[in-house]
Image (cartoon, rainbow over all chains, first blue to last red):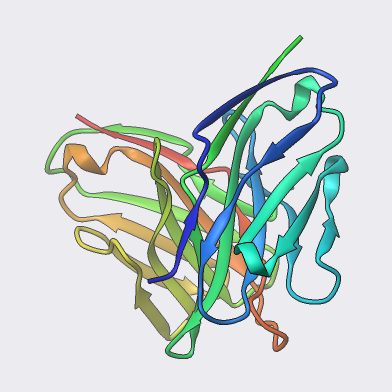
Length: 115
Length: 115
């Protein structure tokens, strides 16, 4: 069955440090991959997406992610974290089933940023 | 104005009551979705609709029903609320994209508490 694993439930980094959030997926076909961010009390905002082509994708707020087919991974990175990046991050894989399409989400990684 | 709105934003109700959560969108998208979010579980799909006449169950539809009143409106009902339906509920929309999986845009969420 299709699934998304975010191995880290909670990560704490210092402001200015680099960040990498891990995401592994299980899906037989070409994956459509997404990262969303949920700030406290807010809905989900799309950070970036991978559909095809260049495996390093740039997103909003200085985030990037790299698709590695051999590792079934789509890790999110940021070179220097800002306090405003404190939020929960969700990786998702888009898949088609029986003529319909849907997103399957990971369980999320909560990011705390220390001053 | 927000593209995807949800009402109410917060609701406290009692076991056995009927509750309706409403979602409206101004994005002109045909596709609408209802998810619930529980701590540590990520987002799980309840129902989705690809147009006004198309309603589909997601992975956790038991205890819920939906109504697609118009292209822009998609309501979620709990016929007889129970405490384990306490969660954060999100509505999302997307447009059809022939190239693959379309991006979903999320509303701000409704926090529902069932006592």
